[in-house]
Amino acid sequence: ATESEPRDLVIIGGGVAGYVAAIKAGQEGMKVTCIEKRGTLGGTCLNVGCIPSKSLLNNSHLYHQILHDTKHRGIEVSDVKLNLKQLMKAKETSVTGLTKGVEFLFKKNGVEYIKGAGTFQDEHTIKVQLNDGGETSVTGKNILIATGSEVTPFPGLQIDEQTVISSTGAIALEKVPKKLLVIGGGIIGLEMASVWSRLGSEVTVVEFLDQIGGPGMDTEVAKNIQKILKKQGIIFKTGTKVLDGEKSDGAVKINVDSAKGGKPETLGADIVLVAIGRRPYTGGLGLENVGIELDERGRVIIDSEYRTKIPHIRCVGDVTFGPMLAHKAEEEAVAVVEYIKKGYGHVNYGCIPSVMYTSPEVAWVGQSEQELKKAGIKYRVGTFPFSANSRAKTNLDTDGQVKMLADAETDRLLGIHIIGVNAGEMIAEGTLALEYGASSEDIARTCHAHPTLAEAFKEAAMATHGKAIHF
Ligand code: FAD
Ligand code: NAD
Image 1 (tube, rainbow, N blue to C red):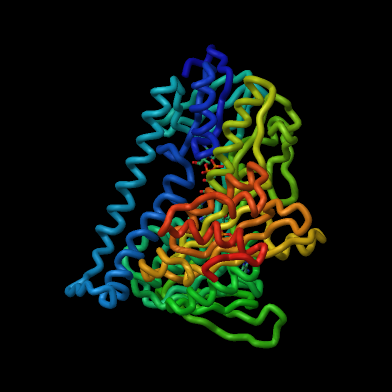
Image 2 (image 1 turned 135 degrees about the vertical axis):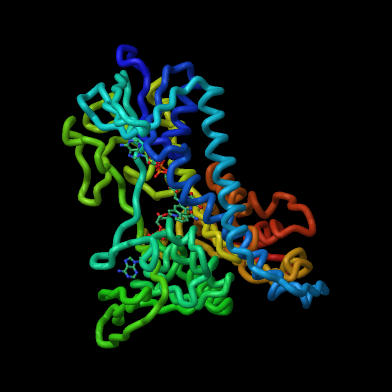
């Protein structure tokens, strides 16, 4: 970067929020610079989040399936061995391919990429500590904060990524731990518990609430997936709080008690994974130099057009309000550039899907039953189990169900909750239905191919009126 050239947009952070905004701005003909300190693009998601975790989930599932789920299908396999080093290598290949791909897209769209840490010097100037040494500064007519999030630490249990690990350590273990204890039964906790349990660990998940799955998961769905995961060998301690812990001789002891108190217990493990949530990351950003405010949870305060109190400085992604999801960050990134360039943009926050990539997957969009009850909205429920779906039966993959919630008066769909092998893909149909304001009758009258798992989606819609054909 040349210090004299003012840019239309300077983006701090090259995660999903930052890199998507940069590409979009490039497409809109803006002069754009993206500053990223990690050394690679793609942020948490591509480097240590969505992508590497899904690689491990996919391949550990294959391994587990070969060991435990092929014989009754008529496939006998012997001499099955885990090569953890190769499993990790496959993960790295996916990560490198994708991060390099973003770098290519930057070039294609004329985005300037600076490798370094950005700090606000004043309202238009970002000072950059370059990764290769030295310093530069970039001036922007508009500035976008997209610095993401970091793991929330557990007080008193220092994360060393060896015996007390975060998700970053959990996707890079060099050997399968004998005993893994997971603090937090949210999405990270359950995805990582699945990976290591499939690879041979004895995994215990300690969750403070009575329900697993983290915020937003429908209570009935959470109970059902807990039963399924328990059958797979994961041990759950719900309604249990972790008091403190202690490392000694390469192992960890964790003191827990029931959330209500009165049932103290000590649990031992080789490795403890801290997965109690993530928090916005603004370290070293120098927000104090420009007076940008954070709320009580450390999130950058913005208005509905993603503006901080300084209107040309905007903010999107994990570092501000809303669910910490890559696709939410991506939607916001496009909208914020549209606001800057055209003065309008749009994200439908009522229509952001969530997917937990366990086996089976859990996916949902819209409201849960507990949310509808709380809001006093009257609704009808339609449920269709995969055990009654011909394709699921053919594939011997019958765990789970599709559950639809429709407005009792208008029949408009309010929420869709799926447990099933392809729930993460099937939820796209639900998201589209919600986005277009579909009724359950609209879905029920739409022809779905036979035999497909998607027929369960149609039948759940029919079930909201008590008229499923096959159940
Ligand atoms: P980030 O991806 O955190 O990117 C911010 C970037 O800014 C970072 O690369 C950081 O180095 C950089 N940065 C910060 N400060 C500065 C600075 N001062 N100067 C320069 N650079 C800076 N979401 C999903 O939707 N699906 C999933 O399957 C999924 N799986 C996940 C699995 C794990 C283990 C984890 C941890 C997260 C997962 N997530 C998933 C969440 C997803 O990763 C985040 O929602 C997403 O990465 C948010 O994007 P972001 O750009 O806002 O932030
Ligand atoms: P989370 O908020 O999903 O779950 C944290 C869980 O920890 C909650 O259930 C909470 O009740 C529990 N908890 C908190 N404090 C506790 C304590 N002291 N003892 C026991 N339990 C405690 O957070 P996460 O699983 O760490 O994930 C962080 C973020 O990353 C989430 O926003 C998630 O959406 C995102 N993520 C998404 C995906 C995906 O989309 N597939 C995958 C991984 C991560």
